[in-house]
Amino acid sequence: DHNVNETLSICDRAYLLIEGKIFKHGTAEELAEDEQVRRLYLGRNFELKRKDYLHEEAGRGQAFESARDKE
Image 1 (cartoon, rainbow, N blue to C red):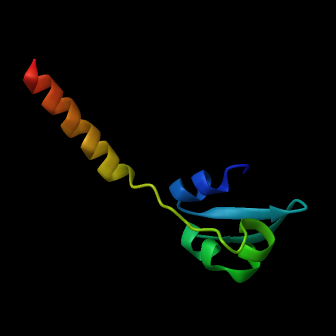
Image 2: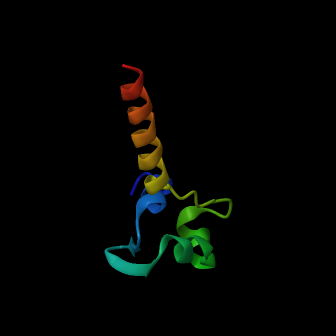
């Protein structure tokens, strides 16, 4: 993927391909910690930033409820 930061932040598992063959697979955390993956694909300074959609959705729902209550 061209935006590996975004992809790994939202996926449960990922597969990294090199020349059409599976190079590594695992959770985003496993891949981000793998030295070979960091060296060949992510870069040594890569930092995994997970998205927390459950809390984001809850926050949006609360904001909607609050706005609706003001009407």
